[in-house]
Structure formats: structure tokens, C-alpha cells
Image (cartoon, rainbow, N blue to C red; front, side, top):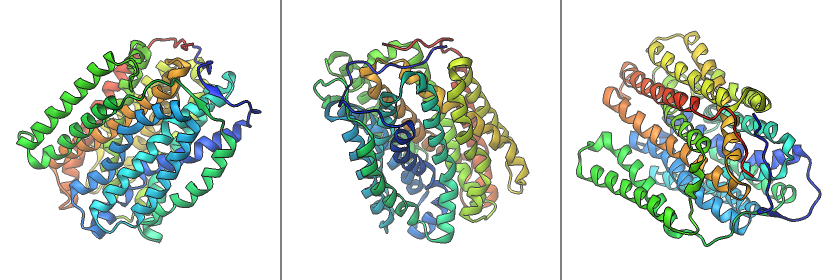
Length: 472
């Protein structure tokens, strides 16, 4: 299968000698690592934050969802703006905003303050994640691109791996505020390095689709808000029903508008590619099932077995460290083995691991029972990152690669937000935080639902074309 990419003439850049691959990978990888780290670094500190800020279960969900929702709602906008004002410029803006918002998170003294700062953090992350892949693809020669994307996936996996451990170590050794203070020096040091190493580039320069942004962002926010509040307020309550219906109507309006406007925020032509459509369905189910389960599993060792945040983070390392090793290997072999094989296998392994955990977990379950499913899930996650990114970029023309990356990241992050909301609703229907057994009673069915969702993604991945032909 040939998945090498070409940076077409539609992307303009300044004439400058190419930078070493290591420097480029560091320039795009350090900010992406910082953003990825924050996806999970908070989850291990949730029990402590819950106690110190007097937060409710709904607050805990919004500590995660405020970040992922703002992140998801502005990914497309950040990608589109990057095409117009410059991808490197937008990337630098995102790093600066993320760094400043991290300081605001650390200074929060009330749940609403932390939720607000997390939302602003998400705005910054939205400019970093998709453009890191676009800038990398533009800077790396064709013959090295699949391997570079594999390393990029490994850096992302490192952020996933170290999130729970760093969160636990910081909470144990200092206090929870330092999980956010750590971002500040990293961001400050990254800004001049990125400005020096990366080359500016642009994509298509049409009129910015303001109405598309409002429809898409409003629809996503309304739908997820309704799901988050459904379990507590009742799925048939007036406010939940009205919010869900309004959100659905806004998303339908987005599709209708994007089909008519000459400069859409989300070019629906991307979905004419069978590979692009299917890989994004797999990306979405991955976000829902895996990260929705992680949100609850990350708290198990503290709530049920009364371990410290650091002890809990160390116990999840067989899961979280595996992608750091597996993702670069997947990037090296994807051209020979095929993205379809790796993605389908990775999703199937994660589904099996989640089902295994749901059946094995109990109040007194020994740690040895977790090692096997954690390793299986971690290997499956590593087989997802690089092949998914490779298919996404190969399925889009060069001028559409930024928006394609933004679309893929948007769907994954919406999946993360929906996964946390849906699986938390399942958890609340069967269990609670009132005791160890009550927590397990809710956790087991929630994780089993996550396993079923990921299994659907594995079946969808099987339908991918055997050979992905890059769009020129």
C-alpha cells in the first residue's frame, strides 16, 4: 500500500533550507505533547480536586468536557484560520493561549473557575493539535513521511502514557495546581524554538465561514450538554429534550449550509473519499469507547482501593506506555502491512481489553488481573494513532490537509466528550461514589458499553480500502 504524501503547490512557504528532521519533530512534538498530556493528566487528580474544590460529579465531567468541547468546537476554525493567516502563526498563537490558560487553571479556587480556564485551554489546544500534523507533513520529505507520522504518534502516546503518572506524582508530592503550572515553562520555552525551526505555510484562502463555525460549535455544545445532564435531570426533562433537539437541528443546518456555501468551514467533499469517511468513524468510536472508559477506570484505584494518585498512575502504565513504543513501529510498517489491517487489529484489541476489564473488575481484584488487559489495550491504542493519521492525510489533497486533520481531531474530541458523558450516565444508572462496591457496580457496565462501541469501530475499519491512494 502506498501512503506517501505530497505537499502540493497550493501550500506556499518561504524559501529556506530544510531543517533537520529531529528539530522539526521537536518543534511540532513538544507543543503537541503538552496538549495531549492534559487529556489525561487531570483524570488522575479528579478525586483530589473533587475534595479540595467541593466539586460534584457533574463538575468532574465538566473539568474534562470543558476542555474537550472547546477543543473540538474550534479545531476546524483553527485549521481554516491557519490556512488563511499562516499555519505557523496560528500554531504559535495556540501555544501562547494554552500556556496562559494553564496558569489560570492553577489559580482556580472554585469549580466554575477551573471549568472556565479549562475551556480557554481547549481553545489553545485546538490550534496546536491539527496544525502539528499539517506542519510536519509539509516539512518532511515524502519517503520519510510515514515514519515521521509514526514518531509523531509515539510522542502523542508519550503524552497519554505520562499523563496519569505525572498527574499522580505532582498531586502526591506538591498539589493538584502543579499539573497546570508545569505547562507554563514548557510553553514559554517552546515559543521561540517553534518560531525559529518551522517554516510558514498557507492553504486555500477563501472567505471565512462564520455561519458554519456558529452552527457547528453550537450544535456540538448543545448535544453534549444534553447528554451530560440527561442522567441527572432525566432524559425526558424539558431542558434536556429541548437542548438535544436544538443541537441536532443546528448540526443538520451545518450540513445544509456547508453544501451551499462556496467557502465551507467543513468541506463535505472530503467525505466523498471512502477511506476518509470510514477512518473518521473509527476515530469517533475510539474516542467514545476508550477515553470514556479511561475517565472512570483512572479513578478506580483511588476510589475503590484507596491508593494515592501516584500509585494509581503507576498501575496504569502497562496501558499508557505501550502506545509510545507501538505507534512508531506502526508508522514504519504501515506501508507494507496496510492501514486497514493495523487499524482493525488495534480496535479489536482495545474492544477485547475493555470487555476483559469489565468482566474481571471487582472491589478486591488483584493488580495482576489488570496487567493483561492493560497491555492489550495499550498495544491496540498504539496501532491506532499512526495508521489513522496516515489515512487521514493521504485521503485529502494538499490544500485540504489542514482541514482534514482538523476534521479528524474534531470527531475524536467530540467522541471523547460524548464518551465521558454517555459512560458516566451508564455509571450513574448502576452505581455511585458512595463506596467501593457501588463504584464497581457502575464501572463494570459502563466499561462494557465502551467495549461494544470500540468493537463497532473495529468492524468499520475492516471496510477500509485495502490500498489507500494519496490524493494529489
